[in-house]
Image (cartoon, rainbow, N blue to C red; front, side, top):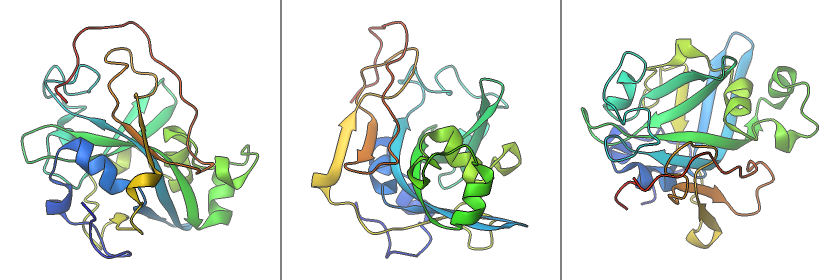
Length: 214
């Protein structure tokens, strides 16, 4: 799975696949966000896949709610949620309409709009830390709950997802997802080896025997 040519908007069909496959596709892709202050572009270097009814770590495990309904498709939309009472996290919806699945955008490298990104994350000690983690990534892009449901495949959208240079398979690393309370050992986190923007691994809480079908 390679996606479109670098710089082109990823299509809904390209994203309407299993979240594990979509996660690999998104490595190296560029998320760009417009605001009155300017545009910030971030190259995605770390992601996590989440399914629905067979994934107890997923927001959709117990069915559709007003909070997670965007995750039920169609693919190519942005799913933004609020966590810990202080942070926003951004996901790219995958799979087909009515079948829930998404990819959490965990970390990225700012490739354009660096001054604006720095102003949004003044506590960052280096540019590599600006989008190092899902809350920092949404912060530098200026994403909030108002962006929930935005169509990432539409060039006229304020937030767009562009194909990037393909990350070679030998540069992709795989491991368990970060900080989830269940299904902690499912290896659905993918990251670009050697990127200083990749976040630190933190294992989640209680163990469970219920895991998604790989």
